[in-house]
Length: 113
Length: 120
Image 1 (cartoon, chains in turn red, blue):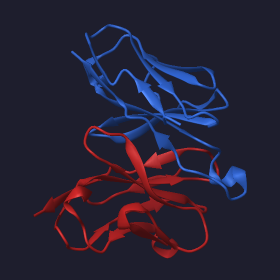
Image 2 (spheres, chains in turn red, green):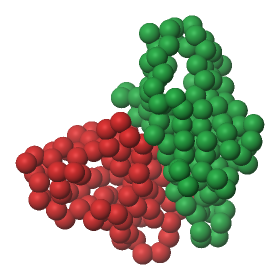
Image 3 (cartoon, chains in turn yellow, blue):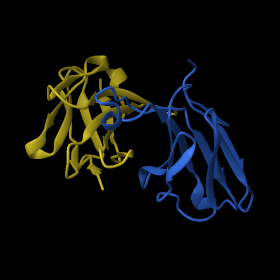
Image 4 (cartoon, helix red, strand yellow):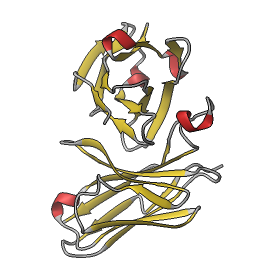
């Protein structure tokens, strides 16, 4: 079965600084990967997704993520964060052996003014 | 489309009572997922349906939990009897068939706003 690890529970960065959120997955075959964002009291919104092809994917709100098969990683990046990026971010993995989408436990992003 | 619609948004109930959470998926989506979110365990997949049929309920915590999808536009998650440890935010999500079933046109899951359940 597939699984997802987000090693950082909380991350704090200054406004304007760059951001990288880590995600590692475990799955024996080709996964498909997602990053979602959750603002307080809200549902989850998709930031970006990877199914195949170019391993660097662009998403909404200036986010991007890179799929690295050799490292089983799908890290999320943003060159310059804004105060409105403060939220919880979830990495998720789907598998071609079943139809489940499994989520990591999330990383809460705090932005310093 | 209005997106995935969940009701109620908030539910407070006493231990032992029956609780029913409702979900209306996006029209045309074949898949429906129920997740539970807690601080300790994050987002857990409870059960998912394909074309109204439950496919995998291995995440349902115990027999007190049950889920149904009587038609393509409605699903319920029922807890009977409820316990304080069931307090969580419950999310419903829907999607088209995943990537590996569509030959390359797969999509993501779209989430509702969630139901915050408090059992006292």
